[in-house]
Length: 504
Ligand SMILES: Cc1ncc(COP(=O)(O)O)c(C=O)c1O
Image: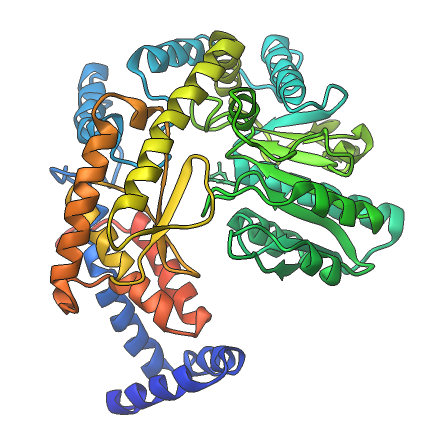
């Protein structure tokens, strides 16, 4: 097929209803000529990103083991050199979310706690009962904080694993107790992508319900979407994209009425909302106080201020937790039982998580919440006052904004030029900043708002200059064939592991 035909084909694809377009796209892609053309296109699109993904200073590629091991001091020096520009960037508050505490004294303390138990593995409960105990206490403390004194749970590797496991537990329980063979989950369009991952991994059909103009899930749509195959309804407290809390009470009531479970994704808010509420901010009911809530996820590695790699999944009912577990009674390797996705688990991370919670205490979490909310309030007010920008919904500390006048992705691009790493959003196009303790440090809010004002002006001046465009998000918002965007994203993942080969 000649290139000119392909251009025409693309125009036709763009005009078709997305579902047909997707089908045609997938068929056309099997043709080697089309595949080559698409590969070139996607490589061009990703060319800019490939540069950004290289570590600064471009150290030489290590492609094989050193013949003899390097001196440990040399290895540490290399790591330190690679890390220092990244660290500086995050510590000075240039990133959205990502590092939630970051104070060097706190981080050193976590590292010490990790170091004390870096060899431990809770899979071997007989060898390391201490880390098993730490995990049980993390679960108990988190459940208590979320008003689930009787709730049970497990420690997992992160928010995604907590959500995956909860969805698996609902699926297996529904199959065992209600004979449901074609399980469905009712989730708002704004629910975290981890729910879609769970749907794909565990063959659960996602039924997406819309959100209203304040970005809260529509309970009437949830009621309409529930079928007798619904195993769970989910809501966020708050959502990743817009930082708004879904109407948990209403959703949970609808779920309870239809004998479905209700999962509250408090990955982002579980360790902040209880304290924000105690500070007197208006927080709608979101935790185990709501009768129909049957499970929750809360990330210790976000606003719990632990090291990266831990989260908590909680269940109101111990029976449901059992459906999360995996056991193998006949395995020649012995009697095997594992509570989460991983086999061996990093006991050091659980120890550091326990250490974070114990050292912060209620007073520490309350103080952190107060500082974050102070910074978030100033940022929200500052953004709302900038001509051309509009804050979405009624957020607490994840502030998303858009523009009715300028391309918001260009504003994001201009912020990137100024050193910021904000999150691009879509449907509608927007950008957000998840405020952390890094932004509560002196001078950060002012620097953010000054840079944002300059970025808006620069984006206005740039107008339609294609040189200063945002190719990836541009394509994602304008090109209706989602399978094509998925292809680009897969190539992006390839890029992360593709190192230049000798001679390239
Ligand atoms: C609301 C929400 N849920 C789930 C997750 C997934 O968490 P993780 O990236 O730790 O897997 C996130 C991450 O930002 C989130 O904001």
